[in-house]
Image (cartoon, rainbow, N blue to C red; front, side, top):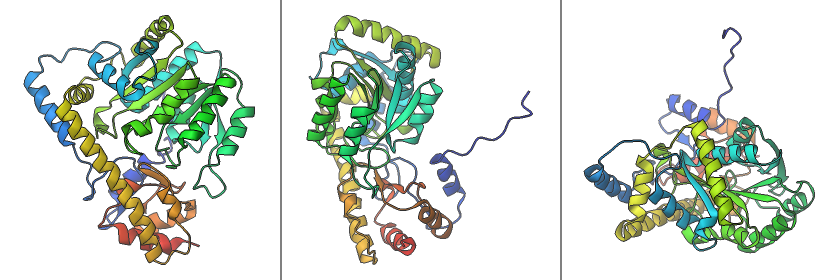
Length: 395
C-alpha cells in the first residue's frame, strides 16, 4: 500500500536543529529554533513554575480527563491576560488548546467550518507553519506586504495599500500581536489604530496570533494592538500561547478564542469550538494549564513570574545591543542598528540564503535561510565568535 511513499522534505527550522545536534563542532551555535535560552545557553524551568508544580504534586487527586474546552481556571486567567476589560467576558468563546500551534489549528478549522470560503491573508513573511496549518484546514492563503526593500523594517503604507484593495469583505487577516515571527518588526500603537479602522470599515475579520505576550515591551504593552482592534472590531479571532512567557514549551499550553458581537453568539461559538476540538484531539492536557492557573491565582507566584519574565525580556534586549556593538567592533560596514528597533526573540538580519548557508557549512552557525535569528540563542560566550563569523560572510 505504501510502495509510492516518499520522504517529506525536512522542516525548515526543526530540520536545522536536527543537523545542529549531529554537528560535532565544539563551538557550534543554534540560532534557528524558537526557544528562550539563558546566558548559559540553557532553556530554564522558571522558579514560579517549579513552585506551582510542587503544590500540584501535593494536592492533585486525579488524572481524569478535562472537559473538551479545558481547565476553567486556566481559561479565565488566560482571558484576563489577553483582554483585560477591553471586551465583556460573556462575548468571548475560549477553549484550551495544545500550545499556540493547536490554537491556530482550532481557529483555522472553526473558520473553515463556519465562514463561506474566506481567504486568509498573512504577512509576507510570516511564521512558516501558518500557511501549512491553514492549508491543512482547507483554507486558501494570500499574502500582504509587510517589510520594506531592506527586509529589516516595516512598510506600513504598503501593508495598508494591500489590505485596502485586495481582500474581500469576510476574509480573515492574520496579524501578530507583538514580536512578529520571523522578523521582530512590530506595529506602533498609532499604526494599530489605523489598521483597526481599516479592517472595521472593510468588514475584514482580524485573527491575532499572540504567542509572545511579555517578550516585547511588557504584558500590558504587548496587548495594546489586540485591544486597539477590539475598540473598532466587534468580532475577531485569537490564538494564544504560554510556551514562551512561562517556558512551558513541552507542556503545550495554548488557547483559541472567538470574540463575538454578543453573548448569545459566544455561546454558539464555544459549542462549535468544542466540536472542532472533539474531532481533533478530544480534550487538552491538564498539567501545563494547571501550572499557569496556579501561578496566576496566587499573588506571590504572579509577582515572581513577572520578575522572571522581565528578566528574560531584558536579557534578549541586552543581546540585541551586544550584537549591534559586536558587529561594528568586528568591522561590519553595514549598519545593523535596525536590530534595536525589532522586538522579541526573533530578528531579520538582512543576511541572504547564501550567507546563511556559508555560516552553517563553514562556521557551524545555524540560521534559517531567510536570515531570521533567535536573538535568545546569543550568549556572552558565543557573541564575539558569532559577530566575527557574520562579518566574514558579508559582501
